[in-house]
Length: 184
Picture 1 (spheres, rainbow, N blue to C red):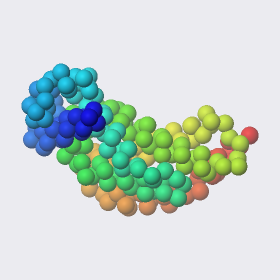
Picture 2 (picture 1 turned 180 degrees about the horizontal axis):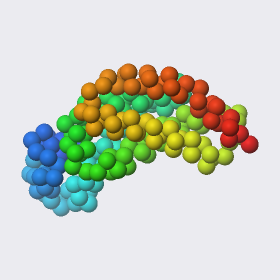
Picture 3 (picture 1 turned 90 degrees about the vertical axis):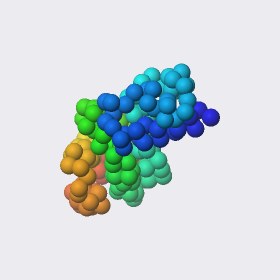
Picture 4 (picture 1 turned 135 degrees about the vertical axis):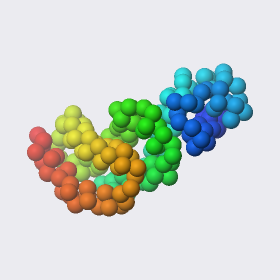
């Protein structure tokens, strides 16, 4: 039941974001649209920004579903782009109402996990310290997230498929090279 309520609150927020900016939406607006009381909202979320963060993470998790291997990291990244595009009014509204760093904070754990899975798979049979793997993932994560944030800032005009293809050409084989440089 808890997930159903959270999803209903998320949908109410997304409906309201089609009509007005995030900064003009209140908890009362969300609960009225959802047909629940304020206490139910606060049982699940501490404030509207907590709901926004949860919503972003849930959308990204759904986008990455089972796209976490070395052969499919491009598909995983493309799925994140598509999920952002499908929620364009929501994402653009959030992007314009919170700092870029906040949107980056939402994307960081998902992209990091996608990349860490890729790196761990690629490191099979190679002895590399976990902190070095995490460092490599972090470097690639900055690149991925920076591209995505710039794409969002530019109103998502460029085709995500082209972005991912260019990135794939640029970094092809570089994960293996990076791992070999950190080999113990």
